[in-house]
Image (cartoon, rainbow over all chains, first blue to last red; front, top):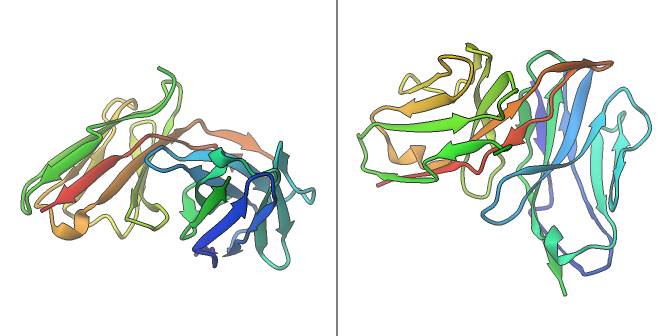
Length: 115
Length: 119
């Protein structure tokens, strides 16, 4: 069974600063994927960044980057140069490498970016 | 329209009534997923389809819940004899299966959800 844990219910950051959201996971799969999804208030969920477990290099997407520590089963998200539009609920998620790709989500972290 | 759509967006019903939700995935996507999200929590997997075949159902999906994807396109999720505990956001996501070195990878695109309130 897969579990995903986000231990920070809420975080806040000043505009233009950097913030890191934490995530730990447990999995029985050898091949898997990890994701960060963003869910703005009253809007649909969108994918921010993904990491394939077999890749050692940390994924980056513009201002978003991850710190993937496979042995520690840790997968944190760093947001640089935070913008007001980054205010949202962020979910860490896992999908096994088997064929169906069911997502297991963490509890979420509410991020508020202050002007 | 290139996104996942869900209808209705909001549904208020009385306990004991039946409700049905619809999801229209992105047209070329062969996989369709249903998730349930309660307030302040992460989505929980309910079931998924590959084309018209329902390949997995979560234990969360009691016998009051049924999902279909009759022609491998849109899907419906029906809840019979609704209970107050069924109040939640019901999310649909679709993806296109393709292989990668890690196995198979499919980015899931989410719809806006249907918010169900059971009085």
